[in-house]
Length: 166
Image 1 (cartoon, helix red, strand yellow):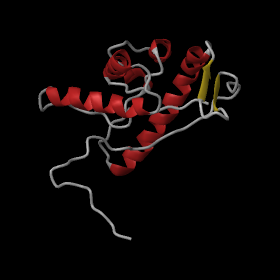
Image 2 (spheres, one colour):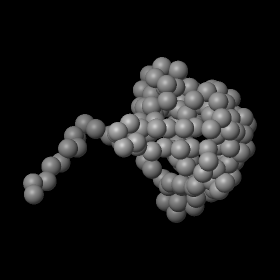
Image 3 (cartoon, helix red, strand yellow):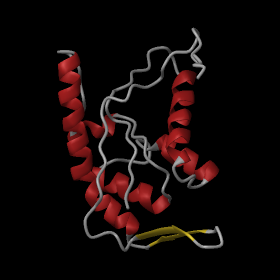
């Protein structure tokens, strides 16, 4: 097989994935039903209690993710800073655009404002819930927004995360 190098010398990565975390929330299997029918249609059912259950699981999930990120960053650099749960109000949170109720619950349960989830809200308002593609759209919006600001934009690594609840 022929290999291809698609990178361009002018391209620079915008983000570095420091660590990741995935979790299935126990007792929530009835909240989401997704399957393909024999006719090829996709059926998706989201229970009205889904946003509340996402919110309830957020503090523990985010705390674990931040701690995991903190360990990775300390191994890379002595002066690395990963925010604590109490410092989240000072950073941008990039979240799947699961809908207004989901974004409000995430903000509420983490003690944040809509300003913290600005890119998520903008993508959701302009495009709706794009399913899995929303994560990349939110990253792109955040990146474009940051490029419009001055060169002194500071990014705190370890905060951007993508979540999946089944």
